[in-house]
Image 1 (cartoon, one colour):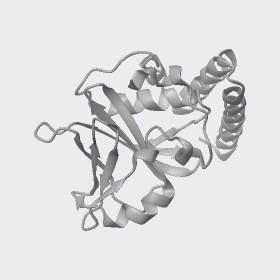
Image 2 (cartoon, one colour; image 1 turned 180 degrees about the horizontal axis):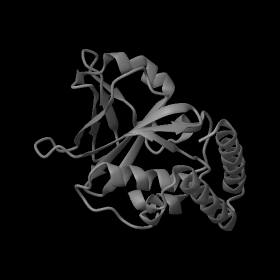
Image 3 (spheres, helix red, strand yellow; image 1 turned 60 degrees about the vertical axis):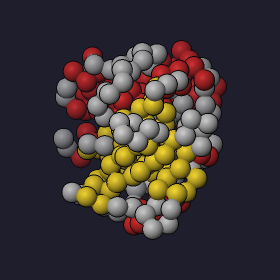
Image 4 (spheres, one colour; image 1 turned 30 degrees about the vertical axis):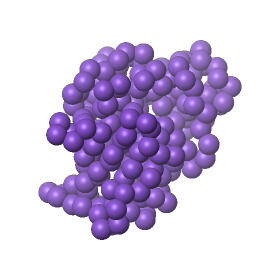
Amino acid sequence: MTDALESAYQTLRGQIFRELADAARENNLKRIERMTQKLRELETWWSGDISPIDQQIPVNQGLPNNTKGKTPREAWVQTRIGQGILLKKLRGAIYQAPVGQIGIAFANEWPKRPNHFLLGLPDGPPLAAAVLLCQRPTGISDLVLPSELMLDVWAKLSRSNGQVKINVKWLPHGTVSLLVPKHSWRDVTKYVSNYAGLVGGAVKQRSEELSLWR
């Protein structure tokens, strides 16, 4: 792509982002749907490949247990569009968000350790946020660790084969804890479905958009 084409793409994408954000604030579902379609068409043109659009998962479609990471990530990213949060995939589990580069990890519950989840993200500089998708018996629950927490714990987390290991304990009564090696467990319950860490501010949460995860 030429510089001119890339500039036009970025300009159009920015306009759509702003339109989506306005529509989300107004809770205008028809406008959200219209702008989402425009975004899909733009991304399809930019990538030169229409097949990913045809394979999108409807936001009200449930996910089976033991689903591998790609499908839950894609479905989760799609549900955020309705809140004006647009995430562009960069590589693997890394996405571009309004706050910067974030990681989206998925894991099933450990078979021998109920309520425990071991997730992994590529090692490197601290991410602007980490989204943890945990497949629980009741469905997928999400946890968004913001930049201030990531800066504090990133270097303390365990590493293996180029991956940062994130150990989460999700208790039935709702308390969620993050294991920080040599520093014990840290309560991170307040970050459950808290999407402010993706945009650096408050995000309106619509219950119908979260039906996928309940």
